Image (cartoon, rainbow, N blue to C red; front, top):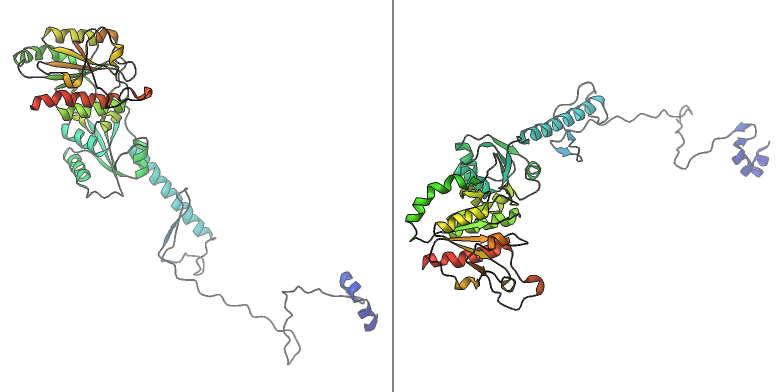
Length: 381
């Protein structure tokens, strides 16, 4: 085929990749033709560009995803790489795997440290932990402190120093570990593993206190009795008010009542650690024994128009002139009929306005605080 014929058939030869009897090469847009040496006419041999020297490793540390993988840049270049620091080398992959194992072992070690014993519980919060350490009514096992929290806060430092005095092992753990120990509750940067705190048996101390109390009838005394209080937050708030306002003793019925848990201690702001809380297996028998000793039993009610067998008076009309047992009922049902029949009066808190039908009563802890303040304020006069 002549040149003129090839030019006439130019499109077809492009598609057929032929130029006469010789195949032609289609060039890419980005492909460059080799340079020709002027003296010999041969194509120039391209010089392979030299590699730039490896950059100086930075003194930085990058933490990866939630797996905890860390990539570290070292001062020393890896051996066997010719001075190059390549992230895809076998040595570098080994370092990354080694770092991952170390991180996992630290997490496992922290979990092993934070595991509590079967017969212990975790106190959380500054006030409960510090009060428990000061009273020494429990057996202490471990003191957990946030490793990143500033201990210059006076309350935290005081609890830490007290733990040192008591020779309690102190473990510095992360905030996530503290959250796991107290199940996501507010711990304020510290937790304390200790033995549980139980109710004291009232029957063991009642007989020994009778002669002493009979001699002190002239002095106004006040006991608080809780009949089936089940909410730990309410129980803690009641204990805090009772301790602050000067109640002499708190007694709770064993049946359908909340135990003394770390939640109760936290809600009481440590008052549960300071006060001796008693329990009785038979509330009616206990109240009958107190009546025989000259005590008056006073109950509580939220609705005065629903009670017909016991006189109901406002808390502002009550006169505290003799030893008194104040009985507070359950959050829902109130006092049982058997307990209510032993009461001389039932105290009520009158509302300050016309209230909605769904708000005819107060929370049991709030109502108990108001009643205790109304009674205990007469001691000051």
